[in-house]
Amino acid sequence: MASAAATRINIPARHARAAFMKKGKRIKVINTHGTQVVDCWALNADNMTEFMSMEHCRVSLERYRFRARDTLITNRRRPIVRILEDTSGGAHDTLLAACDRYRYELLGCTGYHRNCTDNFWEAMVAAGSKPEELPSPFNLWQNTPVESDGVIKPNPPVSNKGDHIVMSAEMDLVICLSACPQDITSICGNRPRNAHFEIC
Amino acid sequence: MASAAATRINIPARHARAAFMKKGKRIKVINTHGTQVVDCWALNADNMTEFMSMEHCRVSLERYRFRARDTLITNRRRPIVRILEDTSGGAHDTLLAACDRYRYELLGCTGYHRNCTDNFWEAMVAAGSKPEELPSPFNLWQNTPVESDGVIKPNPPVSNKGDHIVMSAEMDLVICLSACPQDITSICGNRPRNAHFEIC
Image 1 (cartoon, rainbow over the protein chains, first blue to last red):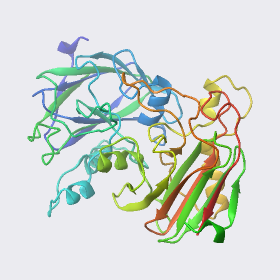
Image 2 (tube, rainbow over the protein chains, first blue to last red):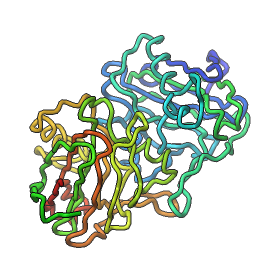
Image 3 (cartoon, rainbow over the protein chains, first blue to last red):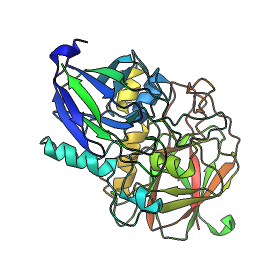
Image 4 (cartoon, chains in turn orange, red):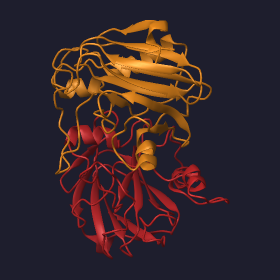
């Protein structure tokens, strides 16, 4: 990927950014500090009732983890994103919901805590989009594998500084990326950081 | 559960039925022939944007499979259903999307094939309900565990004739149960059958 030609866009810590991608464009998402989970969504730009769906991808791939050369599909089972490169070897989560105000209340927060669900709506609206529902996210670098007994724990990250994933748009889409504000459990190394992306 | 007092309701093969349950009521879902997958949804009767959510349950339970004594939660992280009894020991799927017309087209069907997605809408509308989106289902008796290498295969059923699960309503809700029409893969033993439920 000719990243030299692309503008590097900041995803501020605890916030999200959404961007339009024409079919054929590529996005490189970068784990700048190496410890940041980035929730990722992709929605059909022309019809936001169609979106990348983890539960549909798990059927087509017959796996719960996705890796380079996988084509990710929508809730209409059409290709929306293809993973071209992934330095993590596939250590991303596809099973767990985006965090939300209710999650932080249950974790003991008494005031408002930023969260990926509200980040999604905020960033999508800022990008001029109005989805009708919140899809389950593709949680980049979230280290929550299924253990041998079926348990899923909120483990600390295993990613490295500068880890990146490159994906191509298989239809005109809007991508949304949230630098997860989780600082109660250790999935973001207890310190939410910023991340970056480039589209070219 | 005093099932003698309850009316046993048929879920016809390849079709779904939806029913209202007041908080505190119990439902017994019965795998009458022992080989039938039954997709299950539960939605808040007063606000259908709130519904039982597999991805939120996996966060709260820190497991991808649910079993007796588990409380299942909504996308607002509130209890909606509690599992009271389960003769299967937890061999249900929480990971895979409901089948739909696109799934059967990809499996080679040229004409319309009944499917759990359309069944959901059909049964909910017949019960007087109008949800805004299709939640990911709790696939009762679907034998698709995560294998040691992360693979998920559409295996034949391991359930037995008369297996049942009893759940309590933790809020006023509408439950929807679809006798899965899948007859291309072997998850329903290649022969979709009917199933039953009782509410008391």
